[in-house]
Structure formats: structure tokens, C-alpha cells
Length: 98
Image (tube, rainbow, N blue to C red; front, side, top):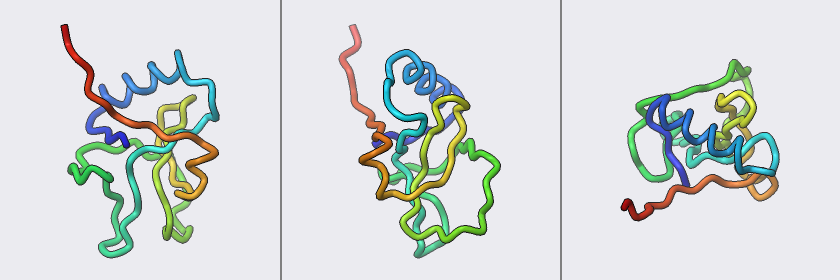
């Protein structure tokens, strides 16, 4: 699953999705809420060096919470991890550079 570490990566992903994605407006990022230390973490264990959270009420229960990229705004929002099969999942892969 994908991790995003700066505005340029976020913008690149957003631009690519706007051109190619035909699914829902929200797509699952590789981030989850860790209840052990009450913070969001990337699944790939990379450091949180950037975020782009939308203004959202934090009064909600964060158990089983993941991050989703909103394709129309490029902002991140919190949502239930279990709906990823409906929303879609974004993965990162290496490609050969010529």
C-alpha cells in the first residue's frame, strides 16, 4: 500500500488518479490509526513526514480507522478500514527506468 511523504508525491498521485481512476471519490491509503500510541502510521513503517488532513471532527472513535485520499480535493480523510473493498486501495510498485 502507498505512503505519501510530501506535497509533490500527493500531487503526482492525485493527478494520476484523476486521469485513470474510474472508481469512487475516496481511495484507501496505506495508513492506519494505531491505538497503542494514539497516532496514525504508515503500513510500510516509514515516518510520517507529511499530512494533508481535511478539516474533520476528531470526536469520532478511531478504532479500525484508516486514511483515504479524496480524489477531487487531494485531501486525506479518516474512515473505516473495513470499507476499503468498496472504495479501492492504492498500492506502490517499482518500475524499470530506461
